[in-house]
Image 1 (tube, rainbow, N blue to C red):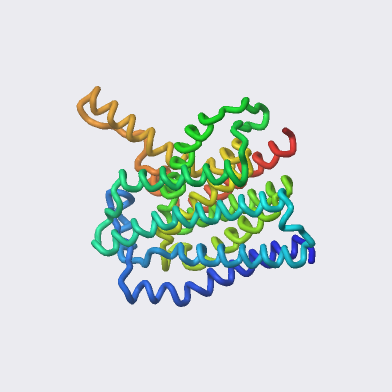
Image 2 (cartoon, rainbow, N blue to C red):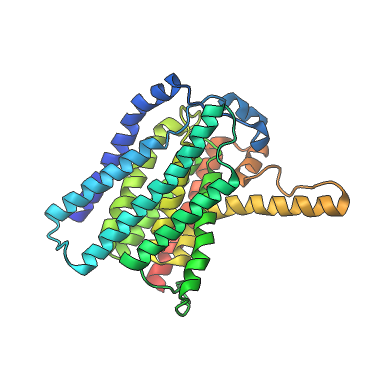
Length: 345
């Protein structure tokens, strides 16, 4: 069986599982009253009407992605005539498995955070220190696994320039990169359909890159996640019937970051993740500027009407649909630039 057929089957299977699971999951979340608490200070006032919308919908694409990717891999083994005992094939398997487990662990952080929020009926879950501690531990574990069973390179590949081996400093540098990017994806989840759409585009770009780099096993995961995001969007497009919650956004954050690091193409990761990066950067800029002006003038001033930056566009009159389309197109454009860097450099 040709690999492209397996890839399409994996994506379609994940789409169906995610879409159909919502038929059962959304009413169940309603029944157990797992609704999202909304703080209007964290978003536009009109978001208050979304109060109580079921959260933890990320389970739809988490379950579909893992199931479809594993089924696809087994099918690939049975029909692809590959020797699973060969070192290069084991390397590819371990790398893909490490991304899946890494994503699940970050999804677990999100689940604990979501559960605390709905249990308390308040928008405060895990503390910042608790989140950072868990993210640090899981990031270290992921990098350790890659160094032992997958990618042992400690260079930074920017396409047009690659550093010398950085040794232990590579891992010290990558830990904050992982934490920043995963939380950046989490911040992107603030408009119906936004995070799912941007990640759908990112996974399609990563699939093309995996094809160029002959990373077939990893491409099964990216195709499965693309299909899962699309299935979830049936329930998440405005007006959302269900939110992915931190359960879903943390899983997606680790999936995007983990895939980029396994491919060991850092410029590519930067370009594919540019929407997430700018979302988080807008918050950083706003906070720094507010504190600086408060100290200097006695009152804090803002550059953006509200952050993350998708809220700035909302406050400027953009509809949620327009924001989703614009941000997703931006992700695709920069993702295509990332593909070009692979072909050129």
